[in-house]
Amino acid sequence: MPSMFTAKVKDGVIVTDGIDLPEGETVTVLRDGREVQEDELTPEAEIELEQSTAALDRGEGIPWEQVRAELQRRHR
Picture 1 (cartoon, rainbow, N blue to C red):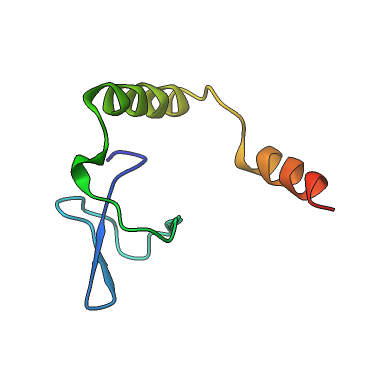
Picture 2 (picture 1 turned 90 degrees about the vertical axis):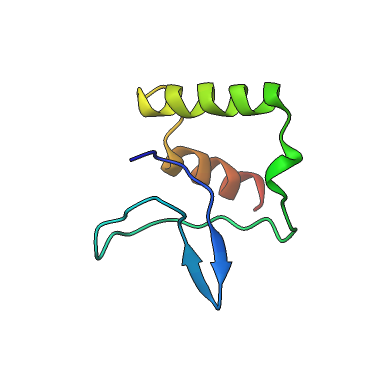
């Protein structure tokens, strides 16, 4: 299962379009407050997103806890 995917909301429920999630699975939903069309990403941006996701899957990146702590320090 991919670690990141796009879903839509239908009748107040998140519909994952072909991604099977185990019952009771905890997920994090990020919402940017604007409508996003599937065709907004250029082919280059899609490749970059896939490469970035693969790097995160390999453990390359900054843990969320570290990012959150840095953001909290900046906004004090």
